[in-house]
Length: 271
Image (cartoon, rainbow, N blue to C red):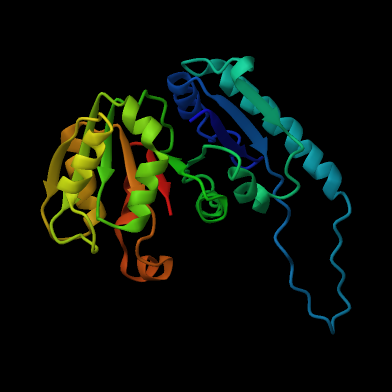
């Protein structure tokens, strides 16, 4: 986890998870690139028969004002977090993106992207999904206001699925550094594939000691995973994202949706 991407805009400079990024950079000797995304006005639908005209005059000036305020806020927060994110471990890129929908593209040349869950920013989930589905790299979701250390006790939410196998592979540097690794299963929450014992054997083959803990069936499996994780003292979760479709999860709920909405620790996702 040497190259860490922290996308931010005028709508998220105050809640971008820079403290969590500083912790990850310190643990792995990494470098954080805080990259500004301008968020253009949402498209306006105009009745073609009305003669109405949509004008974007002054947009450049608005974006420059966004940049100035957002950059100042990011640098202030980097200097005050613990551990401090010093200039040699931080780059603030204000011109690399011309639109926030390019965030996913730039994720492809970083080891991980970090996004905060923020009740004050209605666009956080869109940002998370752009990074997740367009980036091809893991994305860490950080609970709002998180400023504590993490990564000593890692929990892997294992449901035998391809997406979970992929995120385990991508997150191996984090898993290998943990002092304790817990493979978490839930009765009845399985796809065809190797069980928790097989994952334990795989990790131990890499010199990583693990223990297995299993949650009871019933209710949302994401909630059962979080219950087991809390009892085990997990401070960082590893989770495959959307092993059911997003539409299914929107309608019926699912483990990814529950963990996105309610996780109390950082979670590394990949799809």
